[in-house]
Structure formats: structure tokens, C-alpha cells
Picture 1 (cartoon, rainbow, N blue to C red):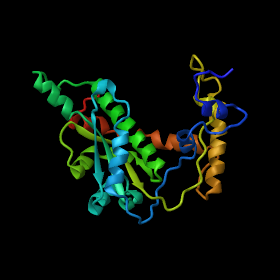
Picture 2: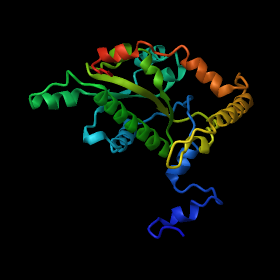
Picture 3: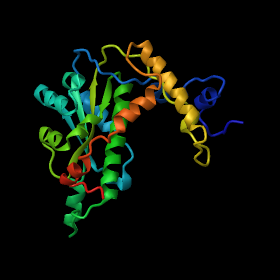
Picture 4: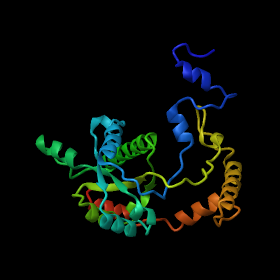
Length: 266
């Protein structure tokens, strides 16, 4: 029997039989794809500001709000960011690039005001600020999608945190966690399949008994998708790509680079 306090829309649409989305937000997420091609229509500053203002209501640990966002429109800056992030053409071409940054400067100021120092910060404070920035970034992504803007996340900013900091003018104790290309879409690619729901969700306790079979199934599903869109792949598509990405380990100098920026992940 449905919970009497549940919204009627959820009661109507949440049954396993219907498969209908329970809300506009759920429908938005179910249909989400990364967009790397944008048309020439302008993206007004006021609209970007509205998206970010909404995103700033995202959860933040202990209300510390340890993030900042740099909005980049300048073509030269976007070209420099493109080079640093692995020559991703869409970083240079996007109308708007948003840099979501972990920012300890306001925390440092608060501690100094009360006679303390952030100099001995540890893993916790760096992790919290990085999570804060990530929550705001995903919230901005959803807010943007809700008004028709589309984009793609850019983790390549962590290839060289210092170079990105110089391009963006970031002070000490600020680093860019990830970026986002944002604009009006010029078409959309077919949606990439995700791993089976049952392989990702565990009830009460973690159960990895079916992992090998789930990965085999996903390898096959992703290979089929890539073949359909004309992308070269292998039969063991996902595990092959993951192995290639993480062996040898990527961004070996990242820890030291972030330490130099004031984030001591020790």
C-alpha cells in the first residue's frame, strides 16, 4: 500500500509496471547525455548567473561553502584551457566554460580572524572542499539542463593544476576540481548505456558476488553501443578502456601539485 504522505504523482508513476519517470528531474537525468557541440546562440550572463545562484543552494558541509566558480568566456583563455586539458576542442569552442574550484581562502580568513591558522590542513578539509565544489557543479549542470542548456564535465583541468590556476588567476589554496562546457546544443549523441542497476545497488550490505558477470555484460553492451555509432572498440570495451586509463596510474604528480596549491592530502 502506498505511503499516504507520498505525493500523488510519485504514487502514480513509481510502480515497476509503468516505468514512467516520477518527476521532471528524474526524467531529465534519465535522458542526460554529454554535449560537446554547441550552436552560436548567445548564452546571456543573466542566465548563467541564475543557474549558479540555484546551484549555490546545493548541500555544503557544515555550511562552510568552500568553493568558488570562475566563468570563462574569453576565447584566448578557453584556447589555453583546451591545450592544458588534452587539446579537447569543445573546451575552446564552448560559449561558456565554468571552472568549479575548491576554495580554502575564506576558511583561512575565518581561522585567522580567531587567532588560528589553516597551515596544518589535512585530508579532511581538502576532501570536504572538493566535495562541496562537486555538489555545486552537478547542481549547476542540472539547473542548466532544466532551461535547455547542455554541456560536458571536464576532468582534464587536473592534468596541470598550476597551469590552470595561472590561466584562471587562482590564488594559493584554490584549485580547479573540474570544469564544465556549457551552451545551447547543436544536436545530441545517442545515450550511452550504463551498468546494470543491480550491479550498482546493494541492499543492507555490499554484495559483489555477481560483479564478474555484470562486467562481462556491460563490456558487451558498451561494445554494441560504440559499434552502432561507428566508434572503434574491443569486445571487452569497458574493462579494456578502464585498464588502459589506469595502468599506468594517471596524473602521478597530482598530489604534489595540489600540495603546492595549499591542499595537503596526507
